[in-house]
Each structure stands twice: as structure tokens, then as C-alpha cells.
Length: 265
Ligand SMILES: [Mg+2]
Image (tube, rainbow, N blue to C red; front, side, top):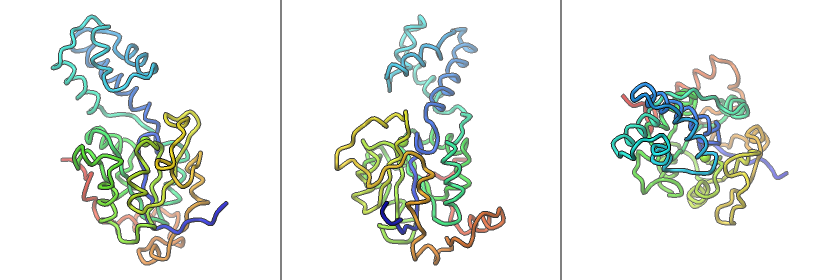
């Protein structure tokens, strides 16, 4: 294996990188199911929605399920259900290897997040996973505008503007070669693809332009790939400051509040 990369900032994608997005989808369907059952006496939404999702349908599931339940495709109702889906409070858990690697990374590197998706839904996921407490630099691209979702270089530029250090000291860890690595590579960042067995994009064979520099099957492998760079010590990210709750809190106190993706009122 090649030498570990000296980096100062480890930036993650969210969905299917740190937690299984399917859990959010299913809990969202359950929330919509309860809304229809309690508000209109209509049963069966979650089951039909799960069937369509399992068949690979994306994007219009609300519209497609309503006629199957004997309801008209009323756009007002669809909008209400989409809001219910996006705003529900999910019960989510990090992948076990994500928990492990975040514990290891926290005292050693600056941590960041760049995620696409509806801002309110993404903030709900971040809170449910308690990532707002351990990943201080967060960009939700929806807050920048639709034009700035991945693979735009803009979210990488915005995050880098918050964190001192050279471009080669950033690494982006993500699961979707269709969009995750193009902007990162154009920004001069290093890239790692997490390719979990059974993952949504695990079978996809990326083109050279889409590919990450390195692939791993578990985030735990980052321990072997990354070392704090020379600038990390200057910022307090030293291997000495590890693994006691007191030190972790002191380390977190040095972070500036997140400028983007900050807590909503
Ligand atoms: Mg993803």
C-alpha cells in the first residue's frame, strides 16, 4: 500500500457514506403513512411506497402512490406529503465504522461535511445523527442554490475558505462517483470512495474522470490512509490530544461556528 497522505481536513459526504440513507427513506414513508392514516383515514402508503422504491423508482413516488390508494394526484396533497417527508424527525444511526472513524479522526484532523439534498431534510439528518456536535464545517449545497450542488466546485471552495491549509490537505470521502469526486478533484482535493457491499452505487464502474484516487470498503481503513500534515499541529490537531472527553471538548471549543448549514432557528 502507498504511503499515508498528509492531510489537515477530512470532509465527508452524508447519505450512504456516514449512515444508510434507506433508513431515512423508510422512516419518511412511515411519517407520510401516519399523516394519511390519521388525517384522511387512508391506509397502506408505506407499503406501496416501499414497493416502488425497491423497484428502483425515485423522485415521484408520492405522485405514483396516491392513485394506488384511490386518491387523486392532487398537487396540494403531494406538496403536503413531501413536506411531511422532509420535515419528519428520523431515528438514524451512523454506520458502525463511521462512529469508529469519527472518534479516531476528531482529535487529529479538522472535520467537514458537504451534502446535497433538501436543506431541511439534511439538517434533520445531521441533528438525528448528532453530527452537528462533531463536524463543525458543514456545507449543505441546497443553501447555496441548485446550481451549486455537486459536482460544482463551489461547495468545495466555500468549505476551503473556512479552513486554513493547502488544497492538497483536504480529502473528500464519499460514495457516489456520478457526482462526488469531480468537483473535489478540480479543486485540488484528494478523494476516497467508500464502496460498501450492497451500497446504492457499489456496483457502478466509474469513468476515469469520475473515479476517486482510492477506494475503501470500510471507513476504518482511513486510519491507514491518513496522517496529520505539518499544518495540523499548528492548528492543534495533534496525535497527543486524543481520546479523553475533556480534551475532545477543548478541541471542539477552538472551532469557529459553522457559517453555512448553521442551526436553523
Ligand atoms: Mg452519498
